Length: 331
Ligand code: ACO
Image 1 (cartoon, rainbow, N blue to C red):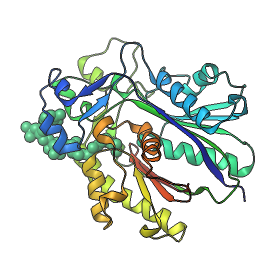
Image 2: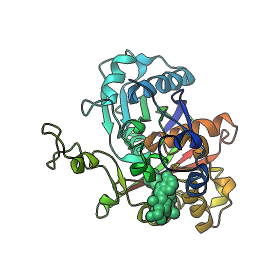
Image 3: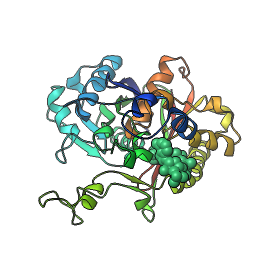
């Protein structure tokens, strides 16, 4: 069986750093409230015309360089994002041009915070089937363009940051590679974490928006419900990856969870009876970067020497939809 392996990684965050203290100038909040509720100390936000593709492009270039491949070798691009530059087309088509790729298949995937694991799983199937040999998989978000940065939107806006992370997937030549991926979704509570417009449900921008309608163009979150679901689904999907591969927690070097909220990660570790050391967390410096959070964390964990050749790691995500997903990977 062909197994796909991560051959290159790269990430990029915008240069503007926004601290919790900076946010107090925009809205009624405090460093203490944000830190105790989420663990976040600062995040990076795009400025001016900067958009998701401007973050995805340098992340992709770094991953290509890290893999030591020629961009011409790439034959599939999958971008996980819910903050694409335009409503359509997706960021992936822009990257085809920006990176000077052949006219390869490019598509965006909208699975919110689970997006990167969904995209990785999708690309993995193409490599496993033998259809493609080199896939570029990216999580990229410029969520700060959509959030309400006033006191009215403070429950959400303090949590989110911008950034991008990318990996190159190719067939493995040895034991390393993606061991399994697991994707799930349940739409019944989708309105606990969603953004209503723009959409085909009736909300459109052609008519002049009332104030009430305009609010539906920003994300809404029922934080407590999201928390309750996240702390159940994360352990479930991590356990699923362990069971599928006959692994115990002791066999796993590091779990890289979606950086939703430090309290969620701590609660998941506690519920699973695992020391927090086994869970990678960098939300303190980046906030919640939605689909970009796992590949950024993966890059930093590798840079910090927390993942070594031969290690088994698990990526785990939970987000809007709800969607949740995991991947077991031998490095
Ligand atoms: N600064 C100061 N006060 C705030 C802020 C803020 N940024 N946001 C809300 N508040 C106020 C509220 O208005 C409320 O005031 P009130 O009591 O006068 O009405 C008070 O703080 C408490 O609000 P709660 O909603 O009860 O706060 P809670 O302790 O539940 O924390 C939070 C909110 C952090 C969102 C929590 O529910 C949580 O951790 N949820 C998990 C969801 C999450 O982190 N999602 C991340 C994105 S989704 C994902 O990635 C999967």
